[in-house]
Image: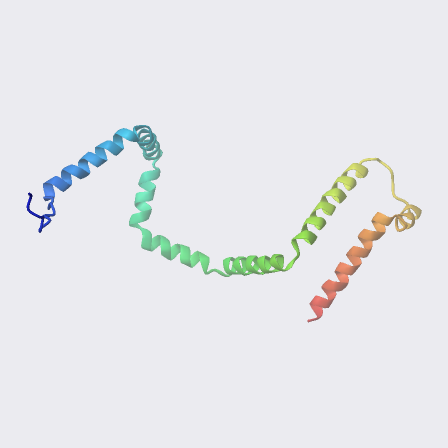
Length: 159
């Protein structure tokens, strides 16, 4: 009968064995990914030929100076105004119902198409035609929408 195992010895890898194992894993990975590595080397070669890598290296070396210039430009009044306006516009857009925006946008497209098709017919617009246009339900609906929009905008400007 065999004697029971009372101790387990863990194999300690030497630095050379670990290095050899890592080299083998790297060798296997290179062999499996040879096409990708060739493409990557071709890309970096093209970037180097174009001088892009030199430019990136120079930017990395001058990172403090570049950061200073960027911060100086970003804190200028026109840039801060642009950022504030974009934030205000984003806040306004988030407050609008997307269905309303979609309906308004599609109506504008239809209106532009209609205007473009009728604009080149060569006919002049008379006063009586303008008065008759108010009876057209589509024109009346657009005028009513515009007037209501202006009324609401005026209420908003009052605050």
